[in-house]
Image 1 (cartoon, rainbow, N blue to C red):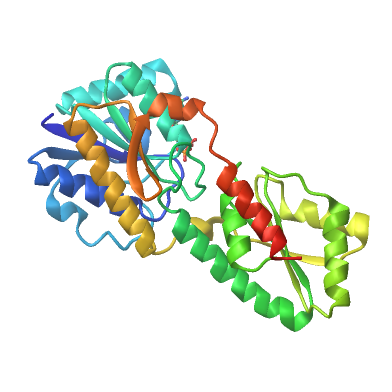
Image 2 (cartoon, rainbow, N blue to C red; image 1 turned 60 degrees about the vertical axis):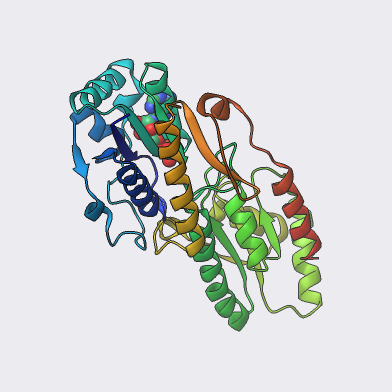
Length: 321
Ligand code: ADP
């Protein structure tokens, strides 16, 4: 392989830039040319493709977002859209593509691979919801952003003796809410992977009040539902008054943590290694701090390993009695 491409797609996440940098530098180290596809699959279809040099990725390792921009592109879910993309890649002489993104982006990569164009997926999403890897690029940064917000909200909650409901992102996955809730000392954490009982939550709040607790923090994952709806339901069923804080898109931005930068560098470089070995249709990941690669198609069909998450959930309950 002499020329490869790289794109970022779907929701952006902090650390994507570090991954792009790793792809570019690793490829150039091996005397491979690298092309950046701008604007995700939309840019692939229109041919928004430019050659990247060592300097193109200078001064980006510490920046959030993605220098290649990202986009959602419904046209790419069609065979025609995918064929157009492949034509553009062939026009530039590109023989393999690194796709940095979430599971939607992986589906695009899978489609290209099935059409004979080798792609490697790199997990970039704050949701941590990609099967086959324990961590995705951006999760750690988002987690720290959420904890910072929880700590600040805790100050005001404590001053006013209030119960706060904090809604965090994560799509259908509870990872961000669970890790943030545990690290932020939340009394209650609601994740889509586990059912909750409103009466148990109300009992816990009452017990806390009786013990003289000044405030309570409830963290709810967006996959469970909206924080506002939950607050209304809690009020109706238990008469508890709460304040709701929806953290929103701030969770997707910010300077990537050291951990995300290192992860992104390792995974980006690994993706290039696979393409150099002519291994398309793979996804890279990290399991027990070791780099792994696996079939991207299988990954999409598999369920995520839930044991660690559920153990963590159990621990969070034990520590917040
Ligand atoms: P993420 O990668 O963060 O999960 P999306 O789900 O929005 O984000 O997917 C990003 C893009 O990937 C979509 O806009 C679309 O272009 C492409 N994509 C998603 N699903 C498919 C699919 N089934 N086939 C081909 N391309 C897809």
